[in-house]
Image 1 (cartoon, one colour):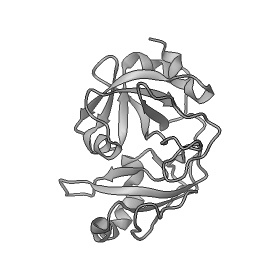
Image 2: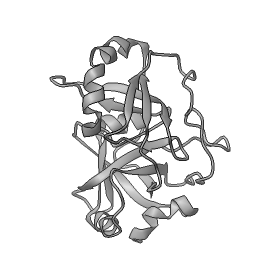
Image 3: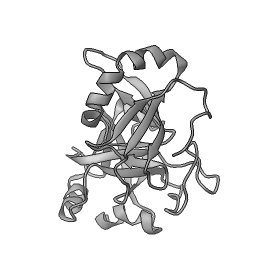
Image 4: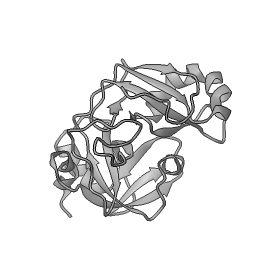
Length: 213
């Protein structure tokens, strides 16, 4: 297995094939096999490192197009993104993904995916978030301050139009939040979260009404 290929897809390569393993974790951070994690650590990539995921037989989109509403610049569906912050998975050849995040991304345990790093993704100056559904609106607004305060502990990156789970304190079920806009962002609408990122909570809007950054 070529560990360097994880970073090649941004230059037209295929990425590294791994198997999804769902784990119980109340964050949106993933874990990579020891050999892959060690290779990335030696190259000193800044973390959290956004990773693009794609089905085994699909090609990752080129890095020269910006999708709108999770659609690629050539009409292809934009890949989902996850963040890696240094965690090591317990199984060779597996990317461990929190179950609630995998559910948001439509990924199943045992599914093969191609994983490609996005080290050039910027730290967003601001990210606008909204509830995934109208039903979630009141719950999101009730914990808006908690999301703004604690998002960095749970979420490493966002992608415009992509949902992710957020776990408020003293709850057993996560809320599902969608990134409505992020600026600046890399191709795919992906951006890292940082200490200086401003998080804004937007009202719920029907699907397709979210704008791109």
